[in-house]
Amino acid sequence: MNTMLNCSKRLYCQRVAQALRSRKSRSQKEQVQRFIDFKRIKTQGGSGGNGCISFLHLWSNDKAGPDGGNGGNGGHVILKATHSIKDLNHVNTVIKGTDGVKGSNKDCDGECADHLIVNVPVGTIIKNKDGTIIGDLDKEEVMFVAARGGAGGKGNHFFTTDTEQSPEICEYGAQGEIMEYTLELRSMAHMGLIGFPNAGKSTLLRAISRAKPKIAPYPFTTLKPHIGVVQYEDYEQLAVADLPGLIPDSHKNKGLGIQFLKHAERCSGLLFIIDISTPQPLEQLATLQYELKSFSSDLIQRPQLIVANKIDLPGAEDNYHELKENTALEVIPISAKVGTNVGLLLQRLRQMYDNEKYSK
Ligand SMILES: Nc1nc2c(ncn2[C@@H]2O[C@H](COP(=O)(O)OP(=O)(O)OP(=O)(O)O)[C@@H](O)[C@H]2O)c(=O)[nH]1
Ligand SMILES: [Mg+2]
Image (cartoon, rainbow, N blue to C red; front, side, top):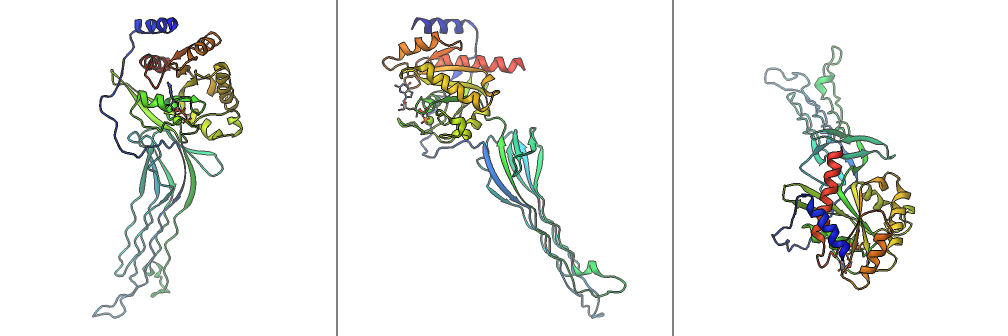
């Protein structure tokens, strides 16, 4: 415990903003909000309105000529980047644009449909069916036309010529484009919690934020990422992602595999959560690092910190010393369940975040 105290003393000497713990009680609602950072969507532009065939009859002139109006154009489906939303939860998997209105008699053209604007978070990457990146919405208000609406059909008035004074033809409105895309978020959180199933990742996220991931003593409780926000006294906010558990050979797509590692790729820093109550913590850490390295060499270069969780359990102290002595990275012993050293961890997180921010 001496090392723990020294570590905390050193940190408290440097002035770091304190993390705020919310005093407001957690909502009692059962529904849990998951964070969606990847979605396949199908978009269809609105169809154009049909043209009209009509001939005008007046009291003075029974054959006053063709007066069929044109149909209106169908609306496009447009994706627009905005800071006001954070994930792809609300984006429907099938998005259909509005149809144009058909033309009518007395040369009335149908109304063109409004474009359908779907908001997506800033940092959304758009890939086509082959996986090629075709759009990157990296700034507020940048738009991407995901499917064009069809043009409106011409009415019979349009087809009147010198030789054909009463055409009985018109056009159908064109169908809107049908496209398929994959939407992905470039960045999901500042820190990602990486660990084996049951290491206590969800318990830690609950302890430091208002997020409500399910906690249970069996593996793979968490199947989709959850994001929690840590608030600091200087109003800075740090997003932490609770990711599904990783198992050996994940990079070969075992367990939740590649899907999991893709979530990890969208976090700027990595927090390795080791269950320190189980023997051979070094092996746990080596496996986690090997999996990340095998997936992407860039991933393992990100800022990282080791969290030795469950320090309250018997035997944990010895395992902690074994881990600490054999790794060059900083190890912080905590108990997410009891709350030991959680404040210190939050300070350390803030330091890492500040270092990253100011080094850019
Ligand atoms: N004694 C003790 N138990 C803990 C601690 N942290 C978590 N646990 C317990 O460990 C079990 C697993 O915790 P979770 O938070 O669900 O683990 P997880 O890493 O999110 O697991 P997956 O979602 O399956 O990957 C639960 O029964 C927790 O109560 C701790 O610091 N001390
Ligand atoms: Mg979990």
